[in-house]
Length: 333
Image (cartoon, rainbow, N blue to C red):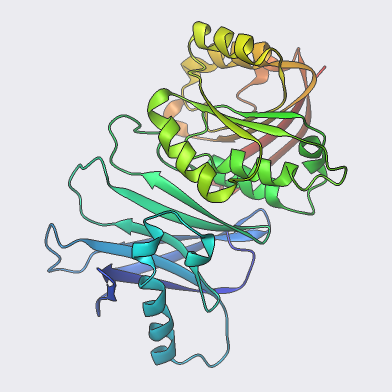
């Protein structure tokens, strides 16, 4: 999501050079999301790109500037592509910015199943540029290594400075993100908590299965290295993991973050038990859920079973009707 009027440039990059060919039959669809814009890009690779050619797809957005010539446009984007090697180190977020150009996505187009294949997505959330690494070919984390729409919507919603419900984050002493994956939502929550006007200290916990923890660590170090954070192993589907987490930390959490954890409807009873075990009185649950017809989910609260213990304070929907993301704020009573 980009809260600006922008030109979108889609390039094929080989090494540090832009190729003179682009995607064929390219189609760009824009969606309004949380006051910003999300661009969906479709297209076909040009003929003649062989396997092993190490071509990357670079999608860059730039605030619209009048009378920018095509020659100047390509020169600027060539400079962006020269940063790709440095981006591999997950270093300074400024590497993603070149003359006001934001690199939204960088990913390899080769298809071999190698453990090292990964992509980067960059977000401008509330004026904070975040760079998030995704693993796109890891058999150990087929879902946990990717960014999903529900998490992106929740992160953008949290980052909105006009959001009155951010007070739940400002007042928290402890925040837990369940099933962190790439850690985007937890990172945004930690940054928001650090802006609390009272200066209240807050500790943000990221959690997932063991295989995903190194990815979370990379993204946390790149985006919020100086904040109070911890990364813990927690498979919320396992009773022993939930009990161990409760025993290790000695208390419940003030805020629980959940995005796209409800895609398997059969797992909802275990998810309900997890929420009840890890939250106490007045705890806040922020839940983002993408409706998927193929999994049997519908446009209602997937955690309706929690309503005897939680009040639903807010319900909103984002995105096109055939791919809605539902957002719920629930408070324990």
